[in-house]
Image 1 (spheres, rainbow, N blue to C red):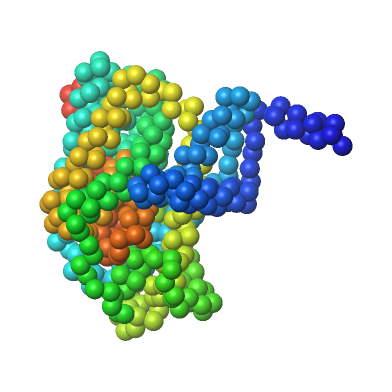
Image 2 (image 1 turned 135 degrees about the horizontal axis):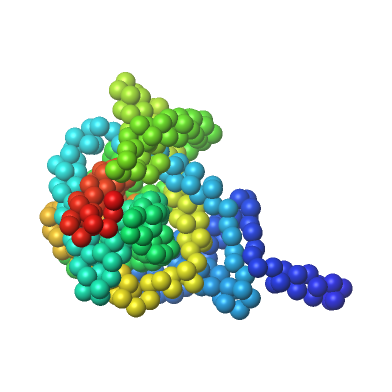
Length: 424
């Protein structure tokens, strides 16, 4: 029996890769969630930072996969297709709670935050390109270490990485650098966001100002408290799943219609947009068609598992390209995001509780992704209370408008003299 067991173990560790199917990958993602939750609860430092559980568990799991790779030369491959669908589900739930009356109430804030993000993107690329010039690097590397990957994420990074690699003057290793920058940014985006919000809340003694009422749909949804007793039942669950499915089905064609040669929008934008349309059509006569509590449960579960699956794909050994000058650029970018969010964004957005939550969200999508931003905000409101204005503004700007503005800003930088000679 012992010899057979040793033989099995030997066979396992003689493979160069471990491949996990969809179901097993989901199971591991849930394990990562509870690992992060347990570790955060037992370590006071992490508990005080209010880091999202998927980020804590994901970083620990990434270290484990790194050790397995270093000592046994084994790569773990996960089927995270389900995570992509869960991201669509989450943003569909956000859209299904975006009533136009809320947009009207927060319209000014949306415009102001949009302007803030535009300024942010300009400086983010200025820092990347400027430091690349200081280190005598190709200016395209500065863009890859700027808004292309930090705000655009892995998808946008892959698009521009391929573009730079296939240019008349190719940038060697462009795709690899883009993926490394996006991965590093995703980790830091989940780490620095919640401490920024908590620092602002504590320093300025902030608290939620909007009262929680029965007819406040957005507050019910965005408070995201797991200890509330809410009327979720089979009927509301099936209705919500039906609406989410409609959002996913029609979301794809909407994105295809909006996409062009100059910019590419992520798939979840269509789900968000379809959800907004459905929400406002169905709530014209009655609010019963949209059950906020059920959507909150589905959205919470989808977001948590999606982020865990995104973290479990991280291969720390692939961050080697960030050594040296490129790592300095990334660290400066991180410092800039924190300072910008805690000062410019916070003060312009009103210096109130929601503004502090928005600042944490800006750290999330300014370094990682919009789901990371939502996870940062979600982690804070669980402890300090609901922030309906923040959960209205950040998803709408981060999921839709930000990608369009980012594409415009990137194209403006690429039109500068030293880029036009390199990219044709």
